[in-house]
Image (tube, rainbow over all chains, first blue to last red; front, side, top):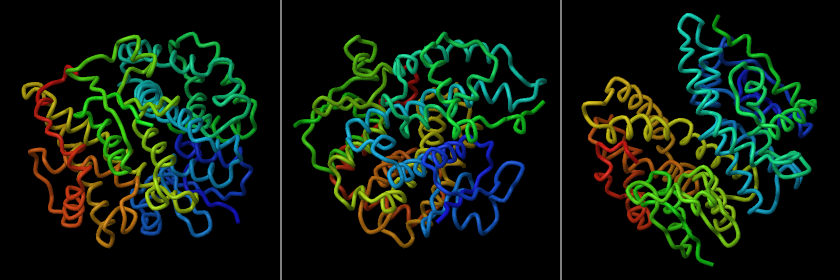
Length: 213
Length: 216
């Protein structure tokens, strides 16, 4: 049975789920809701997800929201031992980088730099602040650079669920023009991701619809 | 094997890990670092966690940092079928509420209100922003209150990892000197948590030493 996903393709949280679905080769139906599509405040939607956010999925009779919980569910249910390592110590070390992305990299990059450069209009944009944020992002990105190493992926030879969390923001990171740290390992890692059809389809999604001119 | 945890007891990120260890009854040793204890800049600590933050867990050869990754590891390794079920379909709803607490309340309460209000000296407080975060926190608490109307705990009759990821916030929520709407189900739930010895030991930790202190 196909998995139903509610959420606009431009949402980075939806992209996490869709890229995983793509990598796992699962059948799905996706409905555009959220942002300019609306539809997250209807009684039907709120009955599934009282927070009124995207994404929400339905798999059989299971309704689930919160993108990271969805990702771990899909990985555990449909992933093989490469995508969702069975060794708990291996999984924990990868899981900490998933958390690090969200507690350390994402607030810095997504909510500061990306937000300022895309979702704030040119008239209100604070270029000096962007320059300061870009500078303080550099040591953060350097931590990831070190962890990626030669790769090719976070757990070695095969892509796993943690690559989805770490990689899904890199399209935005690399396509926005700001002063970045020199990160040859991360550059090569991103290049490898872009060669994956599921990444190209679900994570390399234009954010021009979100841009405030 | 005794678990080793680095992190001061007053840290809101250390507390859920310690509570979880307490609930699971695991032998452990906690080392005070961070805050007034310092020690996060040393080479030794950075070799454990290059990000320089607490908590850090050592279990045998394994080093884990980031509190929620630690929680999921402890639950998977040491939790029973009720606390953190094995089947994805049964685990997912618990994981969803664990995430919900993080994405919806954690930042608004800890960063927005606890730092913005409690830890910021009075003269420097931006009360408009604090109140905006407090409103967000209370809106989320209303959802928890509705959820708890028919359940003793977030995901049923028993304590699960979701309760650890949410409940640790309630001591500060209920004790900060701010006005709260009346939420009877949430209040009864908090009462049930305070009846638990590991909650009292690891979560109900006086935070007056952090008042007006932004420096750690």
